[in-house]
Image 1: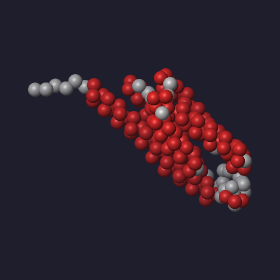
Image 2: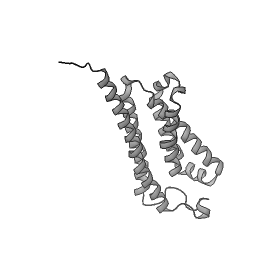
Image 3: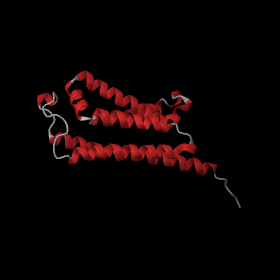
Image 4: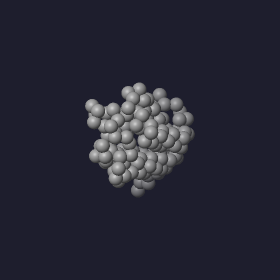
Length: 172
């Protein structure tokens, strides 16, 4: 879970911010597609059958991490390049994403039984326990608001500063 959080919520936005000048001009127009695809890929990999397969295979696990990072790059690039007149879309997208990710986190915390196979080839053969699943859910439920809501606050602040800069100043 920590790998997911770092790749999708730390590394991807940092890479986008550092490489912002190389992001295609019109990429912001795909913000709704980027949001939908990121949510879809995230939920797809967290379907028990795929998560079990990914945790049992180094190749599938790598594919899962790479695909999650790739869609996160697209998502953050689309969100962070929105023009000032569309900043609302970035805030909306971040809030929706946070809610949907937190829904999975809550499901993992309160399921009462393991959603994923016990005894998968992880942790030196120990497998995933209910406690592991609950801890992963807790990590998610802390990370989601921290990163997505903070991203929304950052975009809102930029928007307000840009609006303030456009406001005519009256002197007496």
